Image (tube, rainbow, N blue to C red; front, side):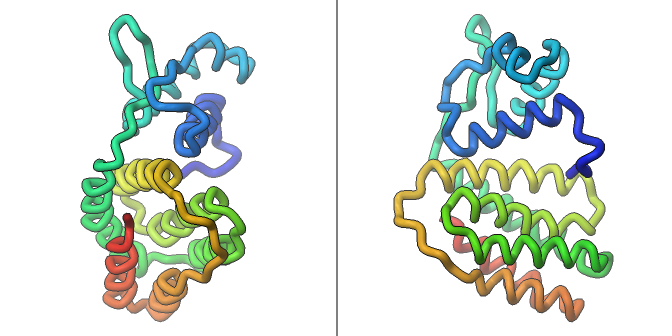
Length: 203
């Protein structure tokens, strides 16, 4: 969760490849060629290797002997484990975040909420939804916990975009509104309770 001025070329590569994997533009088992990536970003192999190692740590890429680094396999059954882990970790982060929430944190969450409600396609909604969940948790200031949650949210996004088959309909997320209202009141119990119900609906 870096601020914009601190983003390195390795960060840019990681973010671009992450988005391509999440959206299915890079398919499972597709080779991630260092030469091609370095040329695309006009950089050396060093930041590319760093970005690929991060993708491996997030479960989005795998290094296979004699076959190189490839996009990780996609198994829809993994969503049950992802859901269980998010249910265990995100409520903890939210409970610690609420007492430390700043007006800027709340403003970012409200902006992401509006983006969710205004989204006219699944990709836009998913990105705004991840931003919302990050914004309500970041104030907990627990970097290891936040990193684990971010990885789970990325995996969750990949599964959502990889398995969604319904026609997109614009919607207002009442859970997001209820969570924000509870956060504004510093009502941790209600915010955590709504978040748990919200995460239970993950498919």
